[in-house]
Image (cartoon, rainbow, N blue to C red; front, top):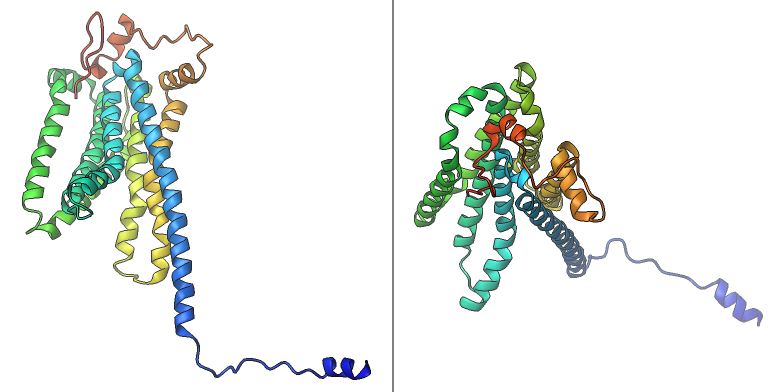
Length: 322
């Protein structure tokens, strides 16, 4: 018994040779496993955020289309068109590859998808900046807006036609001029962002009409849209100068910010505008009546006060022009 205890006490444990060669294959497998786990987690998080953004966009489209008072304000038509484009942009990738799986047998050309996404994103930002400019001119130069009000019904159609032509030419010449095409969104984004910053500065320095305060949320929505893409824009500039694996692990952060901004827009509209707030309550609290703010009726006084914001109103319904 004593010999056994001494044997245990005298047992020597040998450490690994610190100068031995490392198993590079095992280390590489561990790194690949960690990277794979990271990719899976980030994909699932982005998928959840993307679904929330699509749900928020669809909810906002339903709210504007459902209530006449929301449709009667021209600024909301910019929001409606931009929101529809956001839904199309988020859904075009999975739908395209699902269709490509059936038609091209896993070899769907991605050039068509990339060109379409690029055009949709530029068009989305165009509607946002047009809304901000229109809001500012409505408050600063209302007579100017009233003077050209008869042309307002053609604004949306003109924008769509211009970008359809741009998309066709971009797709035709994309194979030969793909490098120049990659910079188009950057050019549009920088110009629009500078213009938006100028509008934010001017808003604090010039006198605006009292009616402009009713739709002050328009500038906030435009700010959310453009500044949501700013981290991604700065990130792609940074990776040109800082190229390492650490930047790869940070890429999902600006992507999440860009994806999640529709949720913030829905929240901002409900917080800033009483009509949107009432519309939200009517949708989720059907047992309550809000007689003080009937969203299905537009009074003569409201039409007179917001005449520059109305596309077209007849006796029966609001005409939605896209």
